[in-house]
Image (cartoon, rainbow, N blue to C red; front, top):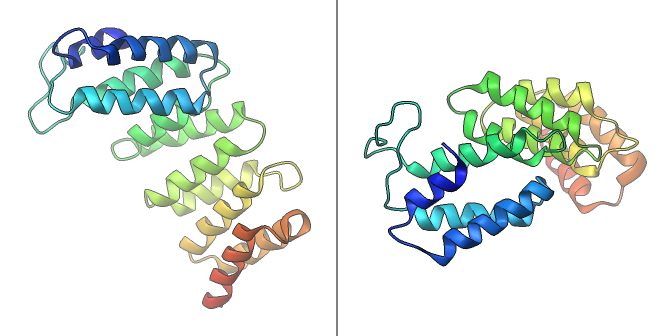
Length: 201
């Protein structure tokens, strides 16, 4: 079922939010990584979906009462946008939706996103997502295989250091910080993670 059809199911009647959702979807077709548009659209989905069930397109049944229709709409949106070869942000959102029930799929989505985004922002977000979900070792594997300390943003190294700390691999954390010091010695996030690590050693 198309995203806009799902959006229309969430509204009791014609709503300016539905029109705005359509406008944002057009904007995201032009730039699937427009995070402001994506986040605004997510907020609209939440606003519309608080109390209205949607039909599951696989079963044609309404979602059970304890399930929210919002996830279904977010999934449709993210999956649709992720089909664009430029898209990385929608893949991170898919990973966020997948991580609880299908960690393997989430890891794949993170890896694809990281491969599509050059600055390291997608990699940073993917590492942080995995650590928050309780998979710091997996986060380290992905990060160590893709991190380029000389080119990526500081957040990748910081996130990878946090993954190492969460995994109890403090020697790796120290090594990552040494790489960060070469380019970002005075960055406040680097200083903070160094202080956190120092308290553990």
